[in-house]
Image (cartoon, rainbow, N blue to C red; front, side, top):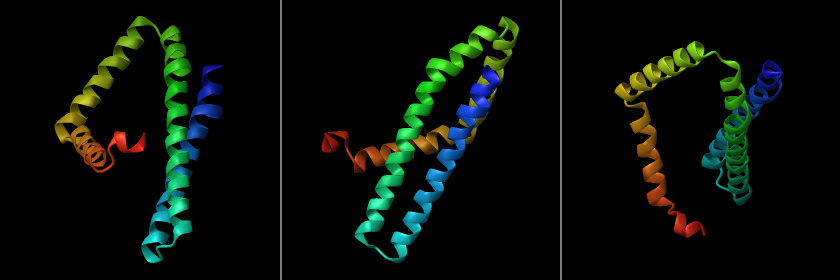
Length: 118
C-alpha cells in the first residue's frame, strides 16, 4: 500500500510540480520578450497552480505518508532516518541554503505584504 501511494500518488505530483515550474518559467521568458497582458495571466495561472499543488502535496505528506511511515518503521529505523535527516539539515545550514531561501522569502514578503492581499 505504501509503495503504491508513493509511486502512483506522491511521485506523480512531483512530475506535475516540475511541469508547473517549467510552464511558469516558459511564461516568464515569453513575457520578458513580449510583455503582453495574456502572458501575465499565464504567469499568475502557473504560479497559482504550483502553489495549490504544493499545499495539497504537503498536506498529504503530513496527514497520510508520514503517519503511515511512522507506524511501519521500527524504532531503530526511525531513529536512523531522524539522525541522517538532522545531519543533512546541518550540512545545508552550514552551506547557507536555508538562509538563502529565507532571505528570498523575506524580500518577497516586504515587496508583497500579506495585508495587501487581504
